[in-house]
Length: 509
Image 1: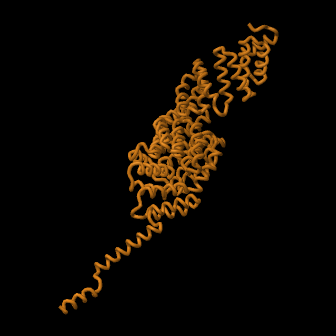
Image 2 (image 1 turned 135 degrees about the horizontal axis):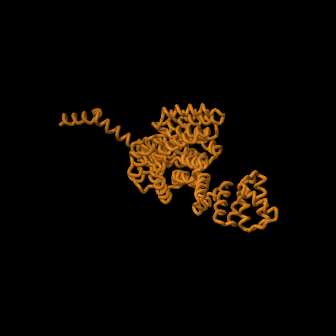
Image 3 (image 1 turned 180 degrees about the vertical axis):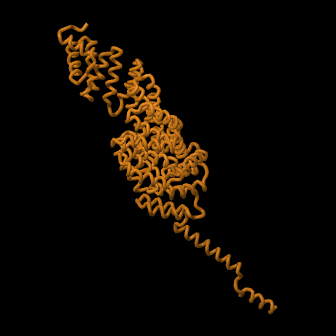
């Protein structure tokens, strides 16, 4: 009995086994983890702390906490999504894309769709070719999610599917997409050729969320397309300053500098975009645009022959380049080489059916230079269809229709063109001429008066006014306007003969 008690005492006093030690360590660890959670170290607690820092304006501090939270094994996809949004707000594109990707991998349904949709937009700005695939994946995850609709709309717009893009953007707006949906709406309206509508949508998006890169770049693009490149440059500079990886901003900056006549500066921006982009075909197109811009600068300096030689060689090296063919056509037109220019313009629109300017040039060559308005009408119709907000294209179509005696259609097109934000003298003059042809003298006088107000040296407008008053049997005003047309160098003999006779006292019959 004593021996048994002695042995039991030895067992009880013996050191703990290795297994027992590990169990004790686990208990200690769990206790410490529990204490850490109570001190605010769990993902949820760190997210709450990050929200407080964000509210206080300390976004970098919030990002640091969100990084820690997202790295925890128990963190869900929502934490990475929140981190991505914080990085995105600071235009830290690569970090945002990585966070969105992590969020998508950990999530399903609406959260996954939002993460992928936001990632697609960030990838678009970053110049990542995967943006379209990300948009498709977002839509597949939840086609009703606002950000999935935003990404799908932008992707459709980039592919030239304007109607589809517009419908998706409207759905995104209805789904609560906010500023992102407005930005998608701007992109869709761009694809429709509605630059005025696109500008309005982008401005509304930026008012709701100042500084968003995709909307800033979109607004800059519409300003350039509206011949207001000087207004676009500071917008792009601000994006590039905050987001050095924004490939789309560099590409648009290059095009803006081309529009401002600073082609040499554009080269650097284009090279930066090409170096940072991932297999972006648009970056290659931009290099071709710079080649064309340099050649057209030669034309402006009177070195047209040299420009034609350079562009001809460039065309032969890249015969499928619409940009180079269009540039060559412009150089040829500068030398009045109309038929060779038409060949290049026709090839341009075959390669790039959305090139409104090329259709417009075809129409102008046929109507103005070759005197064939009937041949001009189809090309000008396509120019207007591609860019319906362009008053110059619509005015040219109205003029060609008028010269083919399609006066009703001409008046309709010119009436639409007259509603442009910046009025054009030729729009009102052509409108007055079409109304005069239909003997709508009073309507014609109202239009022609506006044309003369904008172009007081227009002999043709004064001549049309003279004929309007002739039709109204108003000799005083006929003599006033026909006489003014003569002073301005008008030579048409019929008007001048009537002016001589009526000044001599002959009544208007």
